Image (cartoon, rainbow, N blue to C red; front, side, top):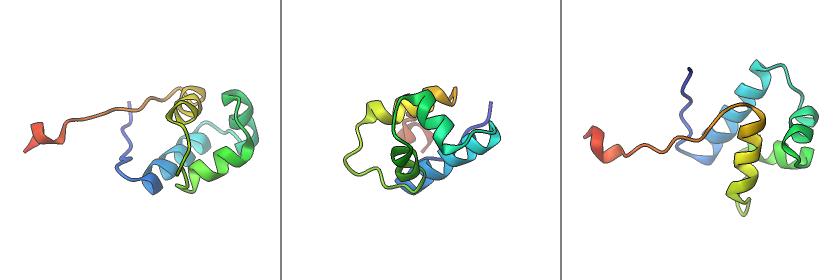
Amino acid sequence: MEVYNARSLPRLGSSVKSLRLARGLTQATLASSADVSRQTVVALEAGKTRGMEIGVILRVLDALDASLLIRDDLETR
């Protein structure tokens, strides 16, 4: 299992793009699998998720067989 750092919106977008490419998917194929528009995938990969519903992001991650992990950083200090 690989873990991607997604502490910022640009990093989240970069992680989604890396996963998509690693799985050999086009933006259009991913969009179709996640039942979102290709423009949504483009925006997500660019880190432009302002106003994007978390459910949309989770559908894209589901289509990539990936998940979002929330870590308590106070535990590591």
